[in-house]
Length: 140
Image (cartoon, rainbow, N blue to C red; front, side, top):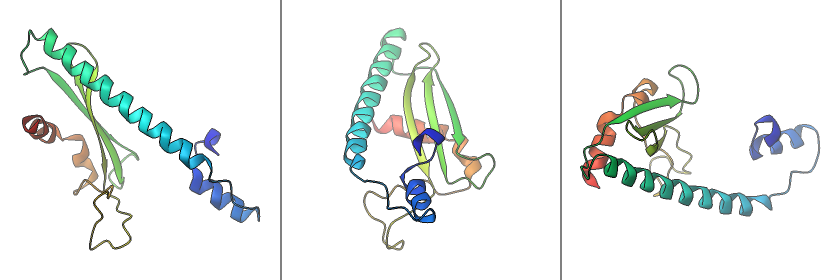
């Protein structure tokens, strides 16, 4: 299913419709290992990009950045988006934030600590998050 851009849930649904047994779940472990490795590599790469941008600015931490945001679907009904911060001097991504308006917690009135929902508001605001990154930078 991945070769046509669909995930595991689509494979389960397809197998159910076709009256086939569900696909094996043994790959979940490997996907989680791959996800963790990708996250670590991404964080290391962005930390190095920040270091390069600071060096390019002669040690000053006020660096010029370009902030760009996008959402999963065109228009405002999208539930997922991403915002990237790119150094103007080096052209490298120095921060990224994935935003989600979707909550899949079993009890929505009491969110879990690892709830994926981290954005409230209309989807058009996902692009205009420069203040978010400004505040995030002040905390670090």
